[in-house]
Every structure is written in C-alpha cells, then in structure tokens.
Amino acid sequence: MCAGLCVIYGRLLGKQQTNEMLIGWFIATGQAWAVIEPLQILILAVVPMFIVEDSCAGRCFERVRTVYNEIFA
View 1: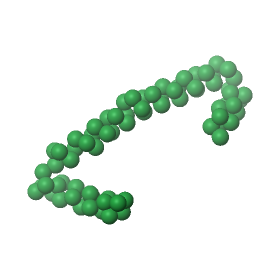
View 2: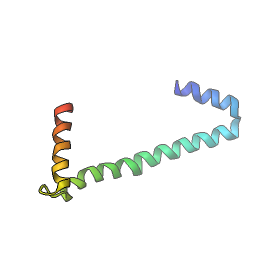
View 3: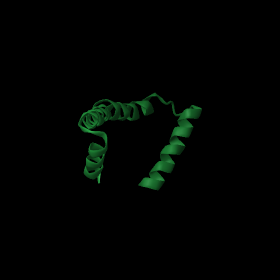
View 4: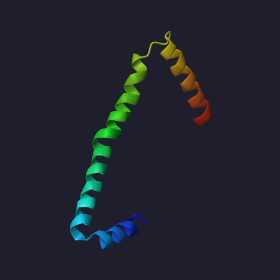
C-alpha cells in the first residue's frame, strides 16, 4: 500500500516534488529512530529513579504501575 501511495504521489506531483517528499520522509524516519526513540527509552528508564515512593507522585506512580501490570501482564 505504501509503495502504491508513493507511485500515486509521484505521478501527481512530478519528479522534483516527489524527490523532496521522499527526502523529507527519510529525514523524519531518521530523526525518529536516531533521536526520539532513544530519548524516550532513556526517559522511561531514568524517571522512575527520581520518584520518591513516599510522595504523592510516588503513590500515583505505584498505582499506575499496578494497573499497567494487571492489564498487560
């Protein structure tokens, strides 16, 4: 389906605009894989270390973790 969509866009937009579109798609994909996803993983791994269990945020975090484990475990 994606390949068909690329062909349709290519026929409608012309060669120059299609090349610019594909370059934009590749840049966006590279940013997502090289920057955003590793940053999200780092944040997900580090944030729980900063939450004190006795605080309101810690109790909320524990509730969320419990619900998550019950639903997806």
